[in-house]
Length: 90
Picture (cartoon, rainbow, N blue to C red):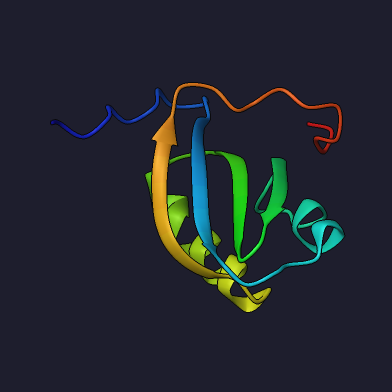
């Protein structure tokens, strides 16, 4: 299976970050790294959905999630983020 194509300049790619460790929702949603983000606690996991400017931002975002207390175990690019009324404003 091939890797997803990089997003066009100026567009965002959607990612799902899965891991263990609870992170405070307001801490994630207020981070400038995450213009569109929401975290879903599914104990013992946490799932974070985010729109990312590009693959070059992934290391910075991973460090940010880890600094908030989440041990990221997987990262996947997805076509769309789930729709939810609890999502942070863009």
